[in-house]
Amino acid sequence: VEKEPQQAGLFAGYNIFERVDGTWGTQDQVYIDSPLKETGLRAYFDALGSRATKAALGDWSQQAGVLPERALRFLLSVGVQDRLEIKKVTCAKNPAPGSLFLGAPGRTSDYGQNADYAIDGLADLFAQQNKALSQLVWKTACDEKDTGWLLARYRNNASYPVRTSASQLVCVLRDSAWIPQNDGRFVRPAQASRDLLPPGFPFDESFSWLKAVHFGAENRQRLEESEKREVAARELGFVDPETFERAKRFAELPEAEQVQLLEEFQKRRRQELPEHEPRHPERRAARVAQQALDAPERITETSERSVSVGLDDVKQRAAQYLREQYSRDGEMVCQVCKAALPFTLDDGTFYFEKVEFLSDLRRRHYQNYLALCPNHGAMFQYANGSHEVLRSGLCELAGHELEVVLARRNASIHFTKTHLADLKAVIESEESEAEADES
Ligand SMILES: [Zn+2]
Image (tube, rainbow, N blue to C red; front, top):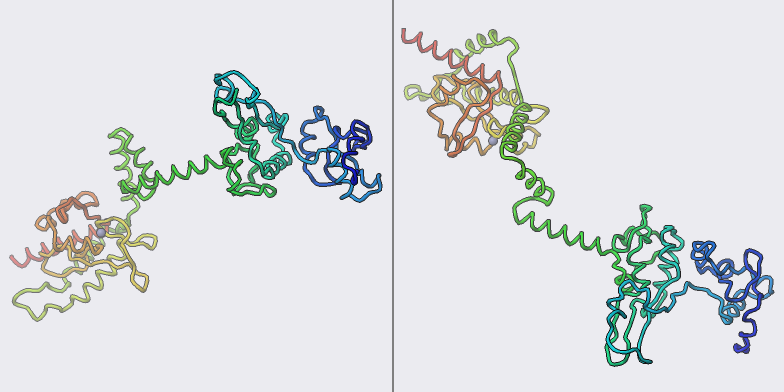
């Protein structure tokens, strides 16, 4: 046969091929797979099950006493199948008849075209979600150098242009969930991700069949959409689309609900603020009042030389005192921000401004300072709209927050219970001292 190929026909129709199941068949009833050659065809015929008209060849070369290469050459020469066949069929079963033969103009003639492509039974077989079969189909599509099978073509005669549409095979490949992914799913090509393809599915973007079946299209679309959302969110001043979505959802709430949520949030934030409470309020007040009498006097015109006497000392004590009052879980807060101070010094302690609270006291008391961030420190000193009412405001204060106007905006200063009680004790002490002086 090798020397005279035309002789191959001699073997046609004879049951001379022993199959793996021990029966014998003609060249049309066998196909090649291991052990002769790994073609992967077994996956297809096994999937067909009882519908299969072919069986794998047994170890035919050994029985015939020839080398596998020669055996293969012989088998191919007599037409034994060694690859999955993309069959040329008519357009009759194409899912888009309107684009092909339905309504096609002209009378049919010898110059008509009616070509479509299919693999027998493939749509049903894909329902089995069989990775070996998927791999065989993938390989078949990649190996087929002629891409004619991607399109069905139809015309009635040469007077009209050829009408084309996706071939039946492309439609099946495009619409079936046959692509295995590393997470165990089988998905339609459009849903598939190249990165999730298991081994045995070589990917090359230049394969036109991958485009024809829309491989990765949904992923690409999702990417484009998420990029668009990202840009839109940033243009509106949100850090990311998720934040924008949350803001939109918040805005959709009834107004009363929004206000309530914000109030609850503020309340929770306040609850988390450092909270110091004197353990023995009366005893503490008495002690503070006593200390207050020993506090260094403020600068007066008559005692210019005492300007700095004791001031450094007071400020140092104030720093320590404020650190105690306004730290919680290793974090120190600004009394106006009611949130963590912006930065720490090289030694790890929080930087804060020690700003004198009431400037109309006779003496310098270390309790008469606020712990503020640099911003609020500057505002309190240079843009303080409440300067005149700080003292009365504090003395009448029922809660924790002293309302003030800083840099022409409403704000509030948070006090711990201890700080508040100490300040009141200091003020009272000064007042009784003043009364004593008058009398
Ligand atoms: Zn602040």
